Image (cartoon, rainbow, N blue to C red; front, side, top):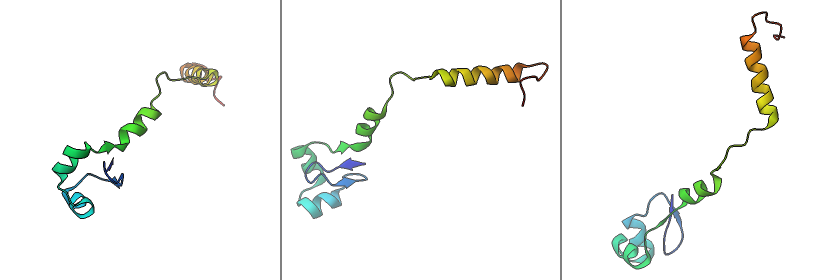
Length: 79
């Protein structure tokens, strides 16, 4: 998804049809005068990236209990 550099309309891709119908210019001329259309997905992706994953103590405990149950020879941990 991109936004038109002139009218900021949300589009799949900037097309010549949109540029000619809405702005009376060719796509190349729009890009030349106003710059490339802004990609919207990159903005969302940059905001939602997690730099360091967080593991809660409960998650760690649950993984340890599961490992103990799977490795148990007597099956004493199975409910």
